[in-house]
Length: 358
Picture (cartoon, rainbow, N blue to C red):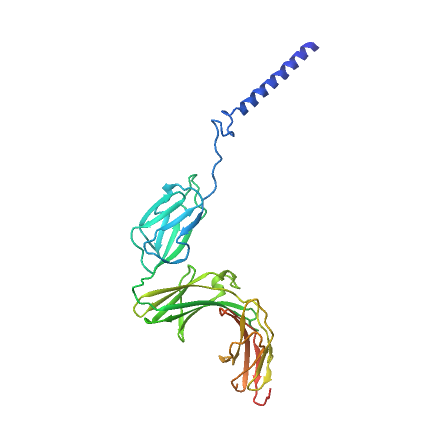
């Protein structure tokens, strides 16, 4: 009986070893293993990477583009040509679609308008989510860019000189500082300008007001959803002017270069000091890593009544050159860089009395 048990155990062990060797041999055979690229059963890993637009022609927010230009989008990988059509590669002028044809080569899609574009006009190009790669992956997100065509040089136009600068204002009340962007434009005719607008990036045009030969518009920091305007630095502002002849001229882009976040400080007079009709205004030295000048301004709570000249950063005081009538006033000191970006101090309150000698 023990001998019979021995042979049965031996038979079972040999059988299991043989079965395991057959299974291992089968898995290692190239023609059976689905993980082996040499196998007839091999399947490549599924492509789940979604394509993106890596470059465009014209670039976003380009100006002066030829009216006969083609619009180009370059992708991060090969695309399914059947998904690149006038339904997924769209060109519009405001809400009006532009007719054309779409071709594709390599990783580049080309929109060829059926006719020349209109001069001095803003266009919007879009690659929609219907554009897919060869593995049927749609682009990550709808891609939109804008450009403006060239102006008609045969028509006389005014010369537009646009600029953009920031204004930081500190005050005693309300206690929160304010940040603004001031867009300005000087228009030199003829023809002379009747109305003007300014647009931040691809936003809606904002009407500008003319005062003393300069067209101006002020943007509060709330417009940009950025209290200290840091994200606005280096971004474009575009200008438009309508002249007497009914022609529109484009200007810009102009860019915000700097925001001055530090503020200067007044020393005296302040806190309702009583002073003479020609008060001496004194402030603390301001330090910055860029060139700047000072400017002092006196206000009677209704309007500015005296504005001092631009002063060297080595000067820390100035005497008001106009005689101030008796009354209540405040004054401020501002720093301005070479691009007119400014930061203004809190107010220094004072009272003028003719009986004072200081």
